[in-house]
Length: 235
Image (cartoon, rainbow, N blue to C red):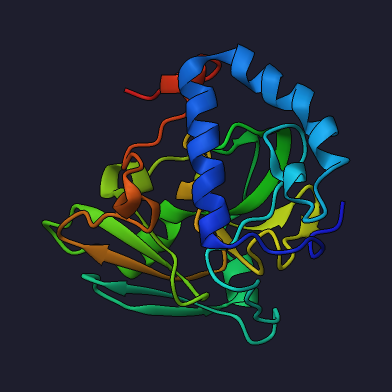
């Protein structure tokens, strides 16, 4: 597996895939099996290669812009802003000097595919929020991608969970460009669209704002366990 290979999938294609995957999640496992069964036949008649993106096994690389953005590890900066006592601007090296956390979790996309037992490593989001000092009365956190388009959001309580990280390492290797590096968000108990790639800023706010996909009707609280029956949805 290469972190940096694969053609980007644009917003319109992703919207179609999300609709297809959402239908498979709602209708049950037999739809996923059907999709998997037709994938091979479609791939023999699909010069675009998009049939390879039907839910199955292995990573899929999605982008809502025209390509994969890029910051080198040396130029990358992560900002913690908003209603905090001390705004932070961290280089990748400074981020990596903070206390580290390792998690092994499945990565589940809302379109239906899952990669099991992924080894993630990074810094708990709660650690960054504590370093910045959240002001009283704040209720939410907004995340912005350096692709210039993508955003996501969590409640402050969700953001402080021990399984919500800013990660820079995937399966023992630095996170590459296609996976959202040099650093991305991981919201382990939620569907992948909550885990903002190419993370640029973390903003503490006094109200919850819908993220990119929520504006297209997707759930704000995207607990995996509510639909696939394999993970427990947090209470």
